[in-house]
Length: 488
Image (cartoon, rainbow, N blue to C red):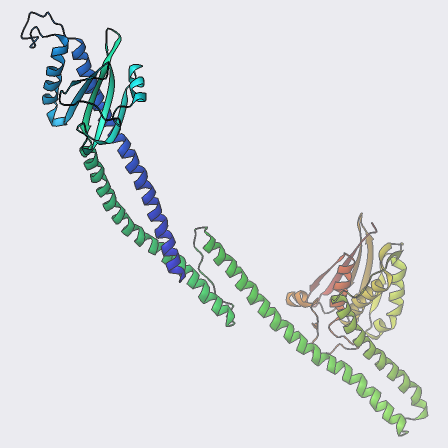
């Protein structure tokens, strides 16, 4: 079943159920209210009749005020009840008078009462002064006719003298109930129609939101990540879903851009790597052919061997950097942290890279000589700092590279500052990405830059639970700051 019809049916059934419950409750309350009013009215007549019956005197001289003359009390009662019935004829009230021996005094044509009207238990209740109200299916003549009765104790001089019964046909009640039921039915039909229209509107509104979402999902499936669902001010679940969908679309759009960017970097890396590997391989191959054909003079052979060794080291470095990065990403390396003299380690790195700095006419300066202890994996620390300092050398010519070690309460900070070519803001955002090269023209390739050095550095620092930051201005230089937590 379509969702629209499901929602329409659900809303409509809910409205119908509510109306039915209200109608049933109202009908029952109305029946009880009408019956109670009817019983109260009949009880008033009984009390009035009882009061009059108890006020009769047999020796009254005023025949106008006492129309029954010198009749005895028992002779007066039937006449009075008959006259009372005539007065209340429009109300269809009839009376039955029973003496204390269960004999029917009025009307004379009734010989005995039905048990359904007055049973032994009710008789005892009446003798104790209770009043009884009820509706049964039979009238006083025993004919099938819904009739209401009120039975009241009749006392004379505080002694039980019998029971006075008032009866009234329940047809008026049935008519009133039918009239109310008919009105309720009309209201039910009208409400159902309005409820159906309202249900359809609500269901259509919900379905529209789902269809909007469906169309947006299809757009996403077709690769259009710029789709956006309109968000309303209300805070229902559909609006929250639309908000989450829009967030997802933005994230997918950003992911797609990142994938495209990474693909461009990968292509650039492949081109860079091919170039970086082709150059040393071409050099080595040419020198080997020279040795094979005796084209290299004896005096140049030592220099040729040294050149082949340098080019081989360059190839090994390229392969090692790729292997390192993959091992770090796949968490296949294990750090063995120890405490060592960080200042001494930096001095050794400066000595190791001295010739490379001289080739760029750079000077490396360690600004503080005091011993600073560092807690890290020694070999990986050397790898991190060599990459950073080597990066500074590569992009600085005829300049100065300053290194500072500083301790805080919880960390050791190492900063490497150069006054080289610097970077733009965009380049600063990308330097940690795999394959990214700040110098894609490959003019500065004396150190065999592959675009992986800083990516490896960042991952290694992360594994040490430290951090690394870079601050740079174009043509002003760059400062890298590495933080290593202290032991414990």
